[in-house]
Length: 194
Image (cartoon, rainbow, N blue to C red; front, top):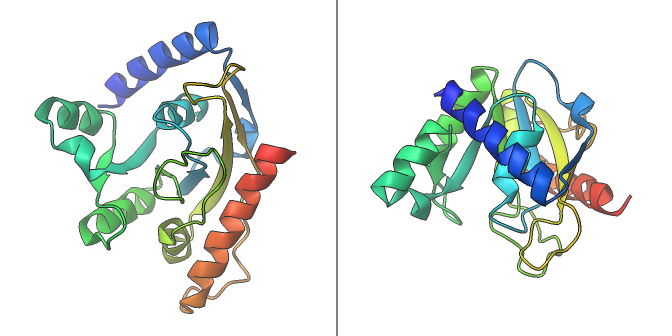
C-alpha cells in the first residue's frame, strides 16, 4: 500500500510542480516520528493531494463517506490510506480508526472545517481534531493552503506552521475541545496571512 502511495505522490508532485509551481515551506515543523495530526484549511478537492505530497511522511486522510460508495474509488482511496467518515454526525467507526492511526505513531490528515469553503474564507472548526489530539497526545501541525481553487491563477502554496500548543488544556474537560478547535483555526489563519 505504501508503494502505491509513494508512486502517486511523486506523480502528483511532478504535475503540481510543473503546472502549478507548487511551493512548500515549513516541512521542518513536522516531527519525523510519533503521532501527528495535520490540520489544514479546505478550499478545493486538490487540498488532500497537496498535503500528501508536501508531507515527508505518509498521511492518512479522513474522507467523506460519499467518496467510498463507488467500488473503484473506494479501492483507490483505501490503497492511498484514506478512510471514510460521515460528516456532521458522530461517526464512531471513523473515530476508532483515527485513534488506531495515531496510536500506531502515524500521521492523520484532517480539515477541521469539515467541508470545503466555497468563499475561500475560513469557517469555524468542528471539534474532531482537537478531541483526537487531546485523547492521544498527538502533535498538531497546522497547514495553510493557497491557490488550489479552479479560479486561482497563482502558484499552489502550502505552509506548515509550528505545532499548536495544548498542554495547558485538560483532556478531561469537554470545554477544552472547543478551545483547542478555535486555537487550531487561529494558527491556520496566521499561516494564510503572514
